[in-house]
Image (cartoon, rainbow, N blue to C red; front, side, top):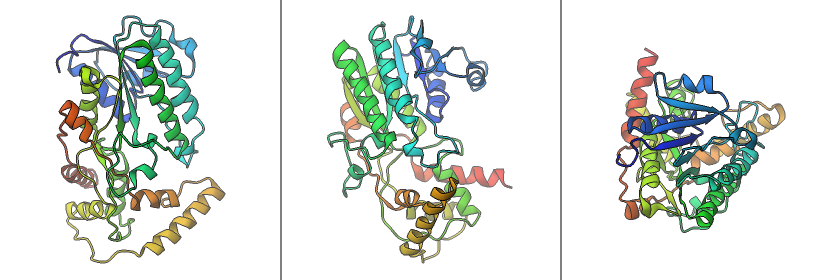
Length: 340
């Protein structure tokens, strides 16, 4: 991609699922990549033979920043808190605020005093709030953000820090909001759903026509690079999806079909799922152990999270190259091959 060759770039959150693919894409395009990480030894193993510079530091500790942006012209900011197994409510983990919100404020203060000319922040649709995406039509960037979790509020605060930096310093900043991301080499919710269905642990799903948006990780990376290079993206917030919504029933039937197992015509009544989810939430609260189905999990599986990526298509000409229909077959094939 023109404009990336020899570009000095810093990536935060590079060891995350999307960050790894972004760093790989930048290296393929000839960028000079530095990575901010708390564990350079572990990070170095993710790109064996890659010509990267690893900087030991932490967004919550500005004292580790000295010299971090020397010579850097562009920053891709992906860093956020990754909840561990002892934090069953991943969207309310207390560390979201210091890492995502305050950490981004620390980063923007550093950028403001540097010669960085471009900064792209990979955010989440959770910054908009679940209610915004459940109105019966695809949510877009013009809708007022109303985040309903600590994770979402911290993401929105980080977005505002980034956009405020652009207005105050006149540099090129842009925000990319991601929905559910697929294409992560057997990781993520869809891969877990495939394993559950293949293992007979996923119930015949009711015909609830909810609508949820998604995007392939490689399309997300392409969009992030586009936002960094296209001057029309400066100061803007964009949603990116693969262009169509999916229901949980569609996912269920598609996975069953790829497994060679016709989906049953019937489905478990919703009230049964709701009762099981209520019990799961209670057990999780009493024991601290993560349960396979909770009220929050059921809402994800039955509610809407529908977003429009018309703005990035109209303004920047972005066209997704991947579809979930193809990805499901690839994931099922990989699962069957690994369990042969």
